[in-house]
Length: 591
Image (cartoon, rainbow, N blue to C red):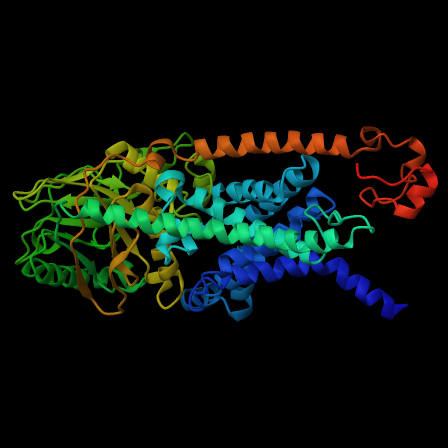
């Protein structure tokens, strides 16, 4: 008995094991493995794992298992970061990794649940059901919002449709291709999506049976290959068109600074004078190299300033220090005026800001970070529930900016730079980038980031990959000034033109195009058209599925009640041919 129960137990756990294997495979896309096709393979395993879940909660659990495995493998740098900057030991840091991965997995649990509902209850095709599930998953907020499309950005030809349907839309297409592969794999085991046995021809027609089973495998596989082939072909043509359109555009010479200041050193007052001297030295080097604009990373300027300041400091705290003429786009912390909360507590709040300092020392109104980092800068929901924020920040803390503001740099030669600033991880957030670009219509995108907390891990590289999607979605060049991370220039095709990753202070030069071109379709309309098409397709698929079910019923085929399966028999198992013939006394015929 134990020997017989072991294979049965393994079979019952196969979907869970498949989920874990799929999540781990998906995460192999991240450095240092960089197996980009693993994105599609991992998604295909997820689709195969949830297709036959007997309940929504089982599908939810399988999606959670997939997401947790993906998080543990993809976020494997987290324990090292925790041990480096906290007193927590090895056991606690790995426990934190598991908890973070489990929290991140909830979006994929939702994906599994939605796929199951659409597939089994509404009888939608697997490809459509899984696409809707992935669309929901990549649209939900997480701490690290990594998407299938973003992870594939090193192959930019595959993600060029992002200017029409966005990063989420491209992820949906990847899900369709992965579901087609899952369908082919299931057919190889004689199973159709939903757990139904694969339809076979009756016994008298063995040649037809031999033809149908390979077709059930071959057609979905070829369809998946055709989908990715079309994406690549369209991408190549689109990239060539964008490159041709860029030929006559004006450019700007921009210097990207990495001051290489550690995360602890930045906040120690004794280090502030040296940090500022390093920034001045790097800026003089940039201006000697012909820079029209120098970018300092997120919170690089070490002294806080009033949020309303319009004149740059002088003397020992000068932004335009000795030998520095400007202009400088600087990341800094600004203080808001103190305010009294309803409970009488005086709050002193701050902004994570960027400002443009012109040669005459005037400072433009700041562009404040709109989306604060969960658990690093705020608590989820803190922007909408002040009482929740005060639990963790009793006397104030960082607060998000109210609205986007463009930083404008007049130029003697060429058009003025109208700059949209994406602060820190905002260049990984589709919604924030769309809001800034749709409101301001910038002709240049700038990202300022401090990745010092993740030095030596995979996070800076993953951050840089996701940033590529913003350049494609918005069709604007993006330049990134990063402290102890990936300094880069990404053109409007999503091609990384310049890249530097160093632990030493340095300056990287870029010549991005100044694009006063119309906003992309995705910038204007976002995800609404795709969501509407998915909803319409689900309704149509559900109606067709119900009609097929009615046609396949015994009454629709004209078969009497005596030929129906006995109560308690498997719902999807067809009656044996010989039994059916004996019961009806009529020759077998095709329905």
